[in-house]
Structure formats: structure tokens, C-alpha cells
Length: 150
Image (tube, rainbow, N blue to C red; front, side):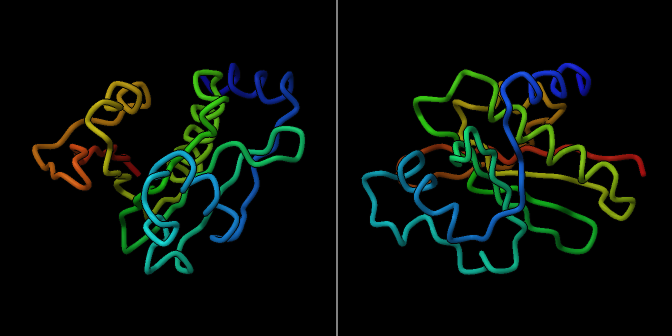
């Protein structure tokens, strides 16, 4: 899968880079909670995270924020511009984050709060559903995780 994604990156002339938290806010708001105030998408600990942006023609079209604590990593606020969804950009970005985490010997688990209707997307990356779930803003979430044998 890595070679395939590497080829896609080249053909689409896209770039993944570390960005600051503020650079994620517009896309998070537009995609995730457009009917809520902008503050709704800002995390109290955003400054502690590592934020990634996937750029297409120098425009950020997909973002994800990574938070590492002890031997676990959580990705949050994963969003791809609505008009670009289904084109593989989110997959490229998530694959990049998983690859980074898998190379960190101290990280044993990656997890996320997945919207229930998106679990099949995350399963493609080896993430499994746990029995933990919750509701936020009338949306059902399931905690999903991937473990690493480091």
C-alpha cells in the first residue's frame, strides 16, 4: 500500500507538512461542525498536538491533529474539504500519520473517536472498533484503535 500511495502523491503533486493548530481551524469548522460556532472545533490542548496538513496546489485540503501521551497516540479533528472527499487525500494523510506512529518504538497504540458512519473507512487502515462509544451533538461515535508490536 505504501508504494501505491507514494505514487499517488507524486502524480497529484501534493505535499504533507506539519502546520500550526490555527491552520486547521477553517477546514475543521467547514467540514466537521459548520452549524456550530468556530470555537466548537478548537481543542483546549491544541497547542500540545502535532498538526498535519495535506496541500494540493499550496492549499490545505485535509488536516489531522495528533496527540501523544505516554505510549498512546490519538488522532483528532481529521477533516478533508468536502469537494475533495472521495479522491484519496484523506487516505494519504492518515496513512502518513500511521506510518510515522508505527516507526515510533515507544508508541503501542493509535486511537480515535470515529463517527459511527465512518468506521469502515478506518477499518481499511487496520483499526478495530472497541466496545466504547458515545454521542456528541447528536452524532454517534465509536472509539477505534490500532496496536503496534514494537
